[in-house]
Length: 144
Image (spheres, helix red, strand yellow):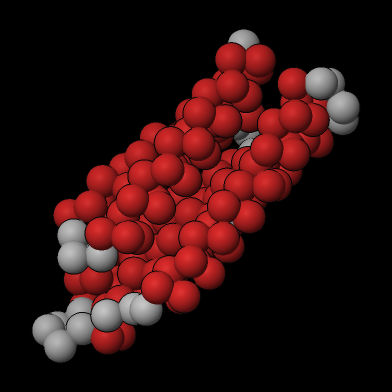
């Protein structure tokens, strides 16, 4: 079991991870280099998804059972992120924001099914994902 100090550190770092999302959203809302702000938001969102997949890679490495399936699933966020990164040439930011928002929600649901014993983590992920998806929606609305 992880100790309270480590949980508090993880929570602080998780909330600090919202700062770029907030900054890029403000850039989009205030029309301060809005196109760049939205593109940076998309890149950061894809990077965070990749990070979340990496968590499951680490969990799979600790598993006593056969981790093959978990390793494969842990790659999904990175694959979606890199596809969106390169698809940015052909796909609108609106489409990328939509796919990313849906992927964040999908991944939270995946984690709820596979990390149910980590209640502190799921509570944190609920709060972070709600905020991240809300910021995606704000950028989607102003991109219409």
